[in-house]
View 1 (tube, rainbow, N blue to C red):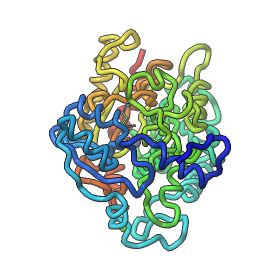
View 2: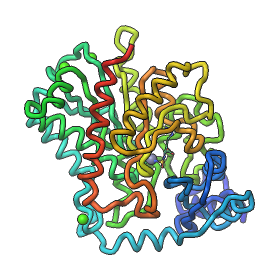
View 3: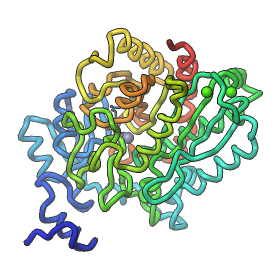
Length: 418
Ligand code: 0X9
Ligand code: CA
Ligand code: CA
Ligand code: CA
Ligand code: ZN
């Protein structure tokens, strides 16, 4: 088939173009996706899987679950990786979607406990109006499709910028990781509803400025449930294939084979650092917190699913220390990471122990702003397959409550910093 010039084709033609020029291994469209498990993997093998363009879903006890085309899986097998086929992603999604949602923009039947973007907006507006003295809702900017990136500030004297350690929680960079949005919502609800009743909450609200962005990728998460069925969507909705927001941050963007330059890939890094409006907006908010030359935000957790891990930077390199990560700093990350993991039963490790990632949020937060920035990979640990991203809504309460103590620990640590 003749390759058309990119600028001259409409959306329908773009699909054909994709079919003709997509790299051999990449799943060009959803119908090609198969789910695989690789056993006994080490971080080098997981990096090889990630680098191949496969979409890694989770890792536990060396078992890595990923989706890819059959051809790609074969090429990984040829490299000596022990790959086993679980099934067809669309069939598995269909099995996880027994009933369509009752309305087009609701979660599938039985999972209505998850919040759609509209419901999320309502809960945040209600918290703002019911707790106006300690909660203030604004926005960090807009998504590609124009949705507000809600930003909730919680503190005593919330209208004032006080000299208190600031802490940021972000959720839902990845569209299908809906449990994380619920995690950020719980943080908002706990630190507003329990203020004045729970002594720990009260003390932290009085002595910290807490910022929560419950959905960094609202376009993606709305798309993932559109039509009442889960799609397994990861990226934002910019362009035809979207950008992986957690490969689009500006520190060592695209440096190290920890992201893809192919728009078809689920780890597509975008056309340039911060080419996605969502990462640009959150980064600008963080930059706005530099006051009198010093960054006010001291600590940050970015919530993901799944694998039950606590991860610290760097992701771009296997090295524990670099010219921007001293031995002492690395030790502090390890100490805090282990303390957090001891509270929730997750496994603590440097993020590159999982696999190499470049352009991730934690690397930028630490390198550019000195923020103690970690990733949590939430429930489940493993065995999720497709269900890993879609635990039943009955799991929301126990699996978000499980992180209450970790959240309190991080808020406390933010005050114990140089
Ligand atoms: O690959 C990712 O972006 C995260 N895993 S996920 O399955 N939720 O996609 C892990 C990111 C951890 N890496 C760094 N923080 N550097
Ligand atoms: Ca249910
Ligand atoms: Ca305050
Ligand atoms: Ca302040
Ligand atoms: Zn994620």
